Amino acid sequence: ARLADLLMDRRRRHLVGPVAALARADGSVLVPARVYGAARRLARTPYRAGLEELAERLMRRRFEEPKGAVGASLAALTWAAPGPAARWLTGEALAEVSVLLGVEGDRSGTGAQRPGEHRARAALARYAADLRVLEQSAEVRSQRLHAPFLDNQVVRACRALPEALRVRPGARAEILRTVLESTGITDLPPGWGTPSHASSAAAARAGLRLSADPLLDLFSRPLLADAGLVDGGVIRGALRSAATGATVEGLADLVSLELWLHRLLSRRGTCWSGTPARSRAVPAGIQRRRDALASGL
Image (cartoon, rainbow, N blue to C red; front, top):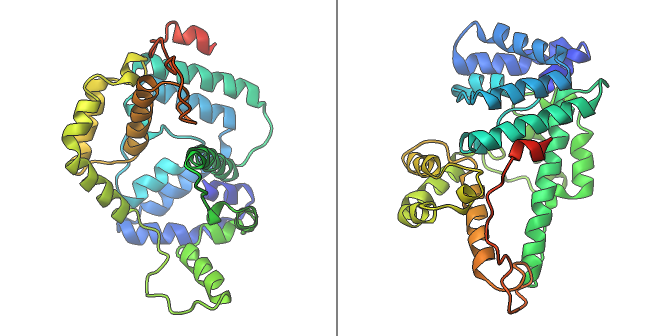
């Protein structure tokens, strides 16, 4: 989405580097035209129209899987895209999310916004919110967490980086090397700092294969399905597919939430502090939401 920001600033020459890198990776001469066209469409699409497009995709359950680096780049050239959990939600839950997106679009107004900056702020807010929850959980056990990449000074320095540098191929590793060299660390191996999610995905897939039976038992009657949010059969299919090579994105969060709900229902007292009490934390259990669309409105 940063490519659209550069187009809005009329700095087209800075698109040459990333587009050329994608063309070399794909081997097609049509890549520059496709990427430039998608970036130009995004630069001309208002935020409200982007939310309306996302709401329509959710209603029609259009979850196309991008193929290759070029496909992923084209899919990212949008104001917002369906997350991994969208594939597992029920039709009612997707309809409610679509309604809420429409409400947010009406509330956003018509002010000028930049897609790249907007997505960066949203990602930063999401990571910070997740960290706050994790910190609260760790403090129960008298532990402290440190997140150096979410330090205020680090975040300000990263947000001050120019747009042209953000989209330049290899810039991330170059910046990290420069920062570490200023602290005296110079003996870094070749290729260090290059972003790759292959190792983490392989570890997650190995864990899924090792814990396949317990996870399938956990989602035999999921509490999230009792709440009317997900389809249990779809979840079990996603777990089997992920163990054999499909995407694992979002599954860890899903399993964590289901485990948390089971723990919340089984224990007495509060789920956060562990304070003993006679009454259960949620005595009524998980209630299925009724009239979800009406509540969303």
